[in-house]
Image (tube, rainbow, N blue to C red; front, side):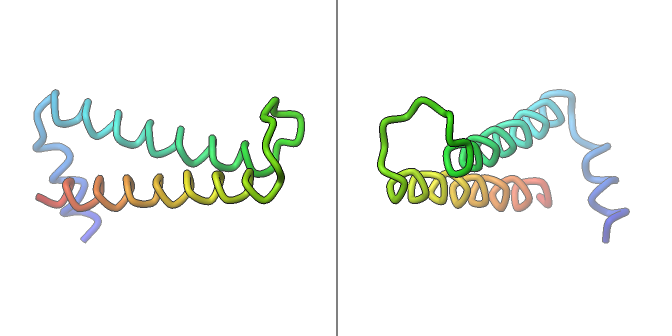
Length: 76
């Protein structure tokens, strides 16, 4: 199964590979941003802790959705 996915990535055009890398980059950006908002106390946001955690969880869930869409689009 892993060999099929690697073979599928190698068959993609340059544009397809660039979009794959861009998708992975934005997945990581949203994930790290959500974690930063939740756990970095010196981040200059004037939000109550409950709202910080809620916003961080929302960003992490959105990064998960982006990752699932990326994986599903990669199998085609």
